[in-house]
Length: 104
Length: 173
Image (cartoon, rainbow over all chains, first blue to last red):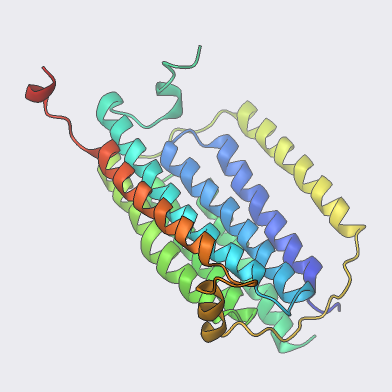
């Protein structure tokens, strides 16, 4: 059996990324779309940390990238939820198909 | 196979299983809870990689912050026990095909690419080291992005309040 290496990590994060992408395509509800987005962001974080740990252990750049991504994801989630609540107030629904006024 | 490797496969199966449930379950509140489990699994993966600080950040920000925000918004916008309407088979099929194609392409590239060193190495990711480097204006420091992110957080805070604020009808009329 192979030892767990960088490729295993990358395969895991690829699986997670495409799971998030599948959710992004199939879901129609804004909150669940946001959840899929969080899964994708997390898979990218795994990638950064794995590359840092396996290939460049002498510095910590990947860890810092992950920390900043987590911070920005928190800000992004907060703004997205404010927008969702505002949309719910005006449309009584958070389905993406119900918010098509600016589509054409 | 060593014990450490077994743990890796367990964590990976846990993350992917809960993540799969999070994108497939039809009750939105359950999706949020599955997402929470998946994020805890990712924190476990950081522990496995000896990144204790990052695991702590993951738990406190994602599990303690973002998922709680998502659950709040579920409560504010959904009726309890409502199921998400089923997506059409055509849409599911095409999404699955697109996803599988992307996955196959990425895995193919990954399979035919070898990276330099493939051994886990000792990495000084102590909290002391991270803190020193984060607030260091010198060559390896991250002080400028740190300050930029603090400004971004302030802007996001103010922006959220402005967006979600209730506008009184008397004032606008």
